[in-house]
Amino acid sequence: MAHTAEKKLIAQNRKAFHDYFVDERYEAGIELLGTEVKSIRRGAVNLKDSYCQVKKGELFAIGMHISPYEQGNIFNHEPLRDKKLLMHKKEILKLHGYLSQKGLTLIPLSLYFSGSNVKMELGLCRGKKLYDKRDAEAQKQANRDIDRHMRDHRDDS
Image 1 (tube, rainbow, N blue to C red):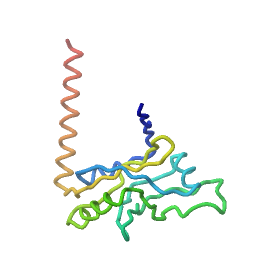
Image 2: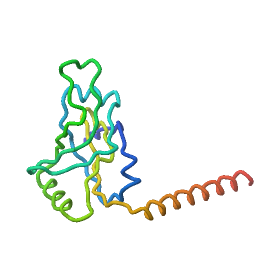
Image 3: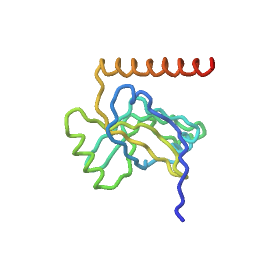
Image 4: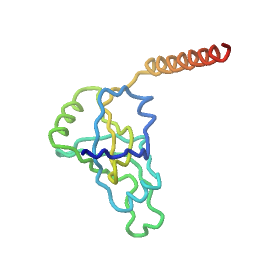
């Protein structure tokens, strides 16, 4: 019988969905130090301005901020250090090929616990132009208006 690990969301990068179109999604493990895991359990992590990059055949998350653990004293970590992401070599090479194309970038979308392991959801993204952002906002507003009218109409009957 297969055991499915429950996903418990830790942090989400909402800015990524505002600034980028997400073409594909990937899951990666993340190599962390002990005090980083304790900080993540407290939710002291920020994915806002982070991105991923392939260096020497390995995948790294750059700009991900994990606040120092308060009781960590000398064992604390550097908050903005590059975190190594764990994926199969074949997937990393495939992503490296995509990233070498113009206009594509790899952005951390969310961080979550899968069982007792910390996992990161990555998105292969294309940047949005200003008019794309305006269109998305107009579409959201139109959907809100439709939902409001439908709800009001149901209440009247």
